[in-house]
Image 1 (tube, helix red, strand yellow):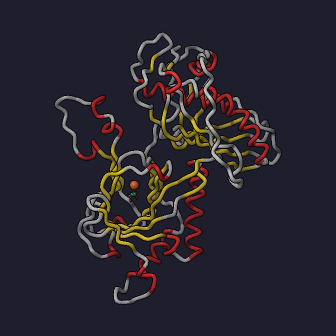
Image 2 (cartoon, rainbow, N blue to C red):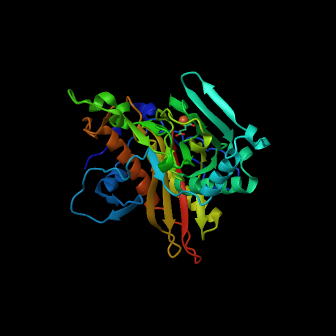
Image 3 (cartoon, rainbow, N blue to C red):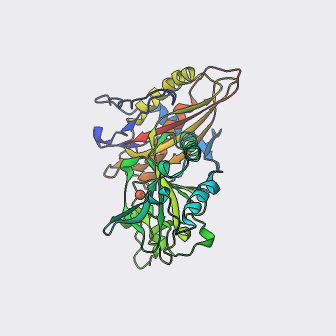
Length: 395
Ligand SMILES: O=C(O)CCC(=O)C(=O)O
Ligand SMILES: [Fe+2]
């Protein structure tokens, strides 16, 4: 079996921030990093276990462990990196939200105070769009509905308990966002489209995100092979009521809209960022009891992560805890934006370079988390199962 080592000393440690395990109701400061013990040596047992693990991930991101004692295969990643997630049919409030916009623009000669809520945002060669704050624009109850649908998704799927103020923007002829990165707002950006895409009267308007191959250009360079736009960027069409999530560390933008000056026919989106990664617990167990057991399971995981090559990004993991015996019955890797921090020589235990160090390092992190969570023991609970979404944040 092949181990994995990072030879960059303390700088190579994983730098995983530990969102405190408490319920979302409580105010929760971010826990400090576990201190890396000086001179600590890699320990074998965890990796021998991990190497023997045969795991498959189904379409929902659920990891199923398969017993296979015959042969220990190489460490495999348990989750594909998912820098872009698309959720069609996101909220039942979409028609109502669109209806408010339409009703305020349908008669261009009618002057009401809501018509003056818009800001024409223009930054030369960078941003050009017309925007407003959704909280100010929509009737209160409708805004709350939108916010709670986004928050529920953020908690369950991303392990983020908050969102930035929600923008609503429309793009008419000439509007665009040139390439930028804005991860300082939060680990996941979202775009919820209110554009009737099939009936649009413009060209452009797709969200444009640089592909991993572009960001890692020379490692995949094939002499003589041509590339075109969609080899270089991912284009996401903002279809009506589709929630697009992406990793805002990646350079991204909005392709220039051409062809209409009518707001009613424009590209219309709600957008912002999911923020404050923190554990989310729902189900039968008392949150305090769940937190205590979760913390006990997390301690050795964080110790193990400190010894692995450094990765950057967020991995949201969802656990199902059986009420019958308190054991973890399912582990799903939901959102995964982990990338390997560049500049670390990643080798096997013999010091030989690995053929695919990025995958190997991601796999090592996945297995440390998977192993640790599989071993967790929660109190049994007659009330039924409990579900936890836990975001591992690597900075
Ligand atoms: O509207 C989009 O597709 C992207 C929005 C964006 O990147 C931003 O608002 O920073
Ligand atoms: Fe952005």
